[in-house]
Length: 259
Image (cartoon, rainbow, N blue to C red; front, top):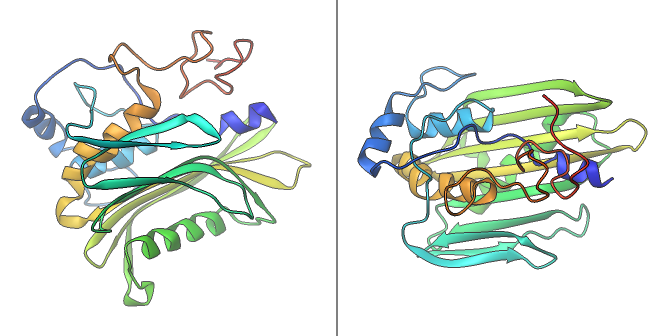
């Protein structure tokens, strides 16, 4: 079960980085075209590509430039993120599925980030059930009524076998009202257990500032999860040479990424 839990934390990042100024970084991402969709480009498209395991052409480690505080999940203190001034963070709790995760929200309720590295679902017959639930949560967090209509502009739902497990990636870029949101779910099905174990991430901001929040908020959150604070490479908690974002169990040096 330990291996199942940590296999949920999978590839988000794709390179070790050096330094460059912010304006050059914006220019570097401005012409990136999104995969699995049409007519979506820029930093938000690069962020979507990153969620799909596609190289992110950054030349610096994104960091929070104006730290305002830090949130940690009480039962898992290593699950901790620094957030900017004007935001607040809380642990994610749900008596039904017992998720492990954190929410970070801007105080005006217009920017929201959720990271759940592990949650178990029961009785799931379709991976779209899980992402639909998370999309509805995203709508609720920013006070949007889905009956007003929304437009998915990027979509991917793909499964593959990993050893004896079925691994699914299900993601969307959605424009709704004044907002743009990216929601993705990576799920693992273990034969015979009757559960789906998932990792979930949600990022939403007003469409007019989504690219800016990608650069100064969402990317720094992701790099805090997987990159050493000194910029010296990816985190490897168990020291087995397999970085955390690839290692099926980064707490066990006898279990490492193959290939």
